[in-house]
Image (cartoon, rainbow, N blue to C red; front, top):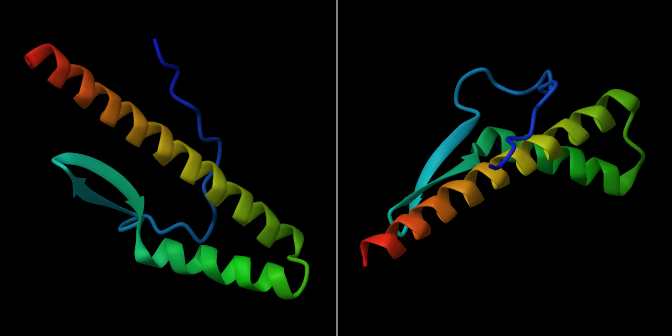
Length: 90
């Protein structure tokens, strides 16, 4: 059985609502970060290229990376379940 990764914290800038959107790809729902979240990540990455992030910003970026890993895990799991179900239905 797959172990779901555990998120310990969310970034302070993480919106309570509208943080994640769902896209259908070939009939499979995939979870993606919202445009607002993506823009915040882009802002932090651009700043990081120009000068070092402060401790709070570095932690925020790390937390967003954890969320990205989590969503990727969920998306892979959903996709694999869908593909497995379709193999049995053929």
